Image (cartoon, rainbow, N blue to C red; front, side, top):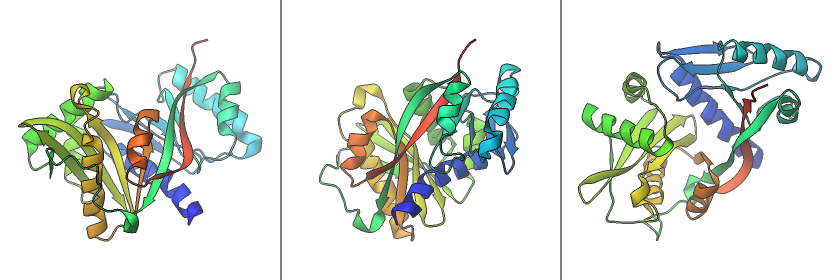
Length: 255
């Protein structure tokens, strides 16, 4: 089961990127060897992912991508996880002047073990996004928290997709916390979990995540997965998540 969950963490993330890449505001490549998505008018999502190189070809393939990146024809960031081939791709990227810029913990949870957490903050009203206005508020919170430009046309597209759920949390009549739930067979993935800085340390992310995952379990999903920052790991451990892998982002250094 650990091997299944290990792969599912990255599989859910990759499937989400591929879904986004189908929108006309994004450029993409989807081949056996490599996939990437790049926003034309925003900052997210934009990365190279799911490399599938032979050991003998890895240096050549990296140099090809370097040339595209330097010509502004491919995304700057390269995500490496447990499904990446070869397994030592990260080391090879470092040898080709890429830098290790962002670490996330790939975490998973058997949803049959999830209950209503004792740390739930019942002062947060959690609901699904129900209209265009709330979707705009969702976008603004993610933009504020991560300091990125979000493509609202992409969000409208995702909102229309059956495998996507947007959640939002309201505290004292103010929208303060959001997340996106992306569903693939058996697996519910949490993405873009965000709480406005002035409302942190109030268990709002935990409360929102707990509700979204319980909803997923109620409609038949068996496992929850996510990629957590160092700050977020402690939150998700409170819900029963365990770390199974590292998801590392590399970026090409200036020469």
